[in-house]
Image 1 (cartoon, one colour):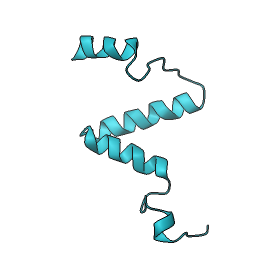
Image 2: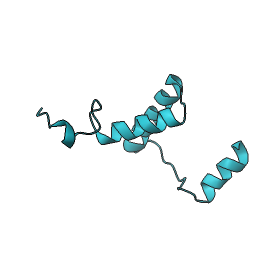
Image 3: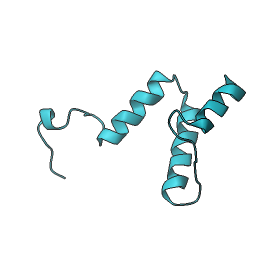
Length: 70
């Protein structure tokens, strides 16, 4: 595996920009280890076609979550 200069990998020490983004969101949301593990497991199921999410950014489904849980 070739290592790029730091300016080409600003997300280091993470392996990918996606890992960095996920970690930043998890920290911003103050998720604990169990919550992070559950979310990662769900994401794995989605990527393998074993689960589906229909929620959309600022959509009606997201509003429903805020009403139920907010």
